[in-house]
Image 1: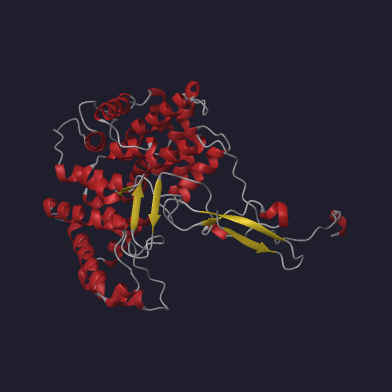
Image 2 (image 1 turned 60 degrees about the horizontal axis):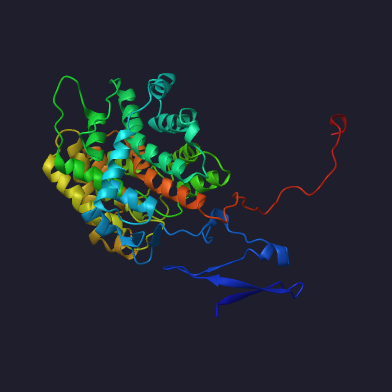
Length: 432
């Protein structure tokens, strides 16, 4: 027999039975859909922090235990054994691919990685110093003007084509945004390179010199893409789902996700880490900075430590930490970046040994290490969120596709608690 919860209106004495729904993992949820009809009430949940907005089979997070699963597979196993594109296939299709399926998937993405010359012209409308996230969102939304004949959201073949096209073109658009800022020519994608190697080449290739790729750097970026591929119903993913519920085209939905990710409270955390390291400036300044962090009357925060969801160690941080250390060791950074990396490593040491941080579970999170990695790769801070968006495209597409295939899909329509003026009559201007 299914479990229920009784909700009683003490004023009227009327009660309703609400079913308790249990998923594969995680907390059970109370189905309150009858609350409005039966009792004339809604739940009040600012920011939806205790509301399950959908059923999903894609990603599961247990913040207390530090668990992250994609389609049931632990993130550490995927990071160690898989490629970013294989994770994309898993998220979108629900199962790991066979070799034949993977070869076809990779080929299709490579075939659609080239940008239409009309889309390239979009960039000429941006200022020379435009934020790359503005370019990314604008060009992705503009894709709908080029591929409108394959945007029947109820056609499975069209949905799949949109997914492949977005995965193929997102690194190309991101790389073009990067090069536009630098005043460098567009680099066409190459089919003889892997997904991450091609991304590297499109970003850093110069026509007057041979492009040499450090395998550790390529691996670091691939791990970072895997670790950011999806993260359940976060702000940008929820935005993609809400936009999609209106039957908007997938390019518009992903563009909406990009603009939400742009917010510093969501996708800007790794950029905040670098800003913090630059503010500290020298290892000798770490002590006073930590003192300010510990002072409850001081607003100074330690960026890249702790996590809203993970109450213990961020499982992604465990993975990316080793990659980060290996990359820094191989690059042996010198010059302007060396002091910043020394500061980062000392901050990490303190956070892992100082009881103040241990008691509060303020461990380094994935943003701490990803910011250092991106900086070590020579990617400027205003491109950090763009790199995040490239990675998260897989999750956005998977979540959008899952929602569109749900037969119970309805347009999203949150309720509100109105606290404005009571009903009143209009007063003519000369009588006010």
